[in-house]
Image (cartoon, one colour):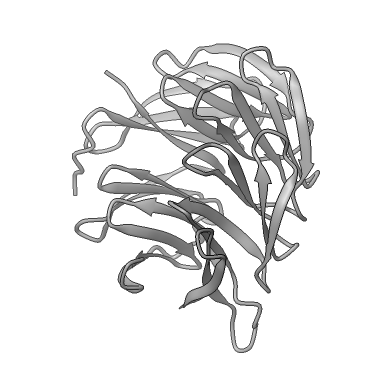
Length: 295
């Protein structure tokens, strides 16, 4: 099946071959491959700029030409990269060092650092850019920090491995394992409502959670052997797509969403309106994925 993704292109890093792949068109065919100077990892798209982890560096690329503009030392295993709304600050989450770093996006000067749990998995900024949430992985908590100082303001214990977090207005959504491994772990979605101070566990889904993101029609949750979309208003499952793998990262793309599966070496595209798996691309060791707009 062909997908109309207009002028959207998919960038995928391959840690085995040190390549950056560009896929485009309705059939998601390979359009370009670029040899990188080191082992690539996470890639982050910010309009006309791309930030790419290569070895222990953060490299900035031009999103249109894919040419390298500059690089900065991160000093660890990069799990996530985020750019502030005013494009002045870059946040780098280091899983091995259990640390989040903040740098000047123009000069590359490191400004601040903060502790980020144990083997942190995810981080998100709120819509105002004033708070930074970090899923603290093995610490079983999500931490909310001041985005300017990286000082922890509040910690939300979840009772199981914290793998994802994201803001929805004044609500912080958190994804974790249920903490109960008998007979099997469950995906637990929790919410902290800042206007009321209420904390609640929204719902449980079967299987081991790995990641989540907002799609056009709801929240996409990656888990063992599948991706599930949930309607947050009604707290109902909209659909589930079986992928026979373990999605590590989901990136929305208009009515579609892309994911990488490091376990099976695949990149997939799903249609969120007509729930189907419409494309799968073989990549030996996919490490990062980003969506870019190209004319």
